[in-house]
Length: 319
Image (cartoon, rainbow, N blue to C red; front, side):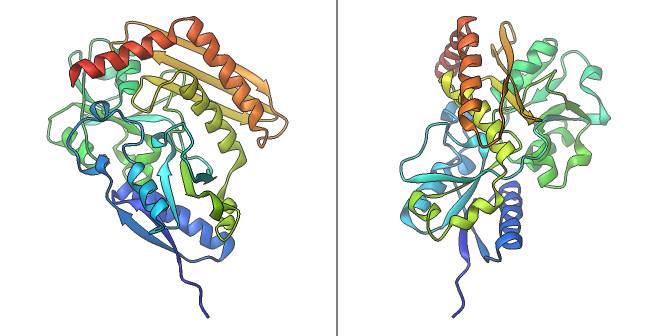
């Protein structure tokens, strides 16, 4: 008797569908298990409110998690940067596939680089993290909050509504729009969001040790270690995905390097720290967590928690 395909829940956007299909294909290639995509519309996809007004954390994942709990899907794929840092009751992070390019990219009119944008140019972004770090680099530009999928945001450049938008380079790749990137920000210029470029495969806890154990076939230990470090900084700062926090970890040759920053939304203040730790194996998540906690402690001593609190206060006042 044939086995029914496993049901993979995904948001309906082209980017989410493409990245979920890539995970499904990788699982099938490595294990032979058939996967069926189940498109689901989340509240974050249909509301017109800006991410900061929604609080950010969990906006795009809660509906998928509800479907997991109900049993209508077997597992779900999220963008890891959208996943709350707190663990969800009854759910397990089954796999973190190998990360794509974590950098941010500028998509500007007339092929302009970031340095060549004229003073007063309007830059669209839905991310306080991006707006804050960009304001630190170019306070002479105007940063405009925007919503919508990658195609919608790129359309705002084509229509002249904004002069440029900033999007995740990995996301552009997943929708076949890398040619729209006119500049790419290196981590030395702008640190990405914790987990940016990475995906999260989530299922019910009991099933990870049972019939869905094969999901671990797409787990990538170095990526998991890196993103655990990044997301631990976020958790220690008591911030969410809508906070102006950037973090980027790199594992290689037994060392884990972690860089993190918190920037005031207007670019007027910033705390940036980095550290390294010996990590014999990427499976040693305790070492990654320890490094992140120490880095966060140093940042808090320099006022990072105050910057995060002020950013949240500004968000609340704007609602």
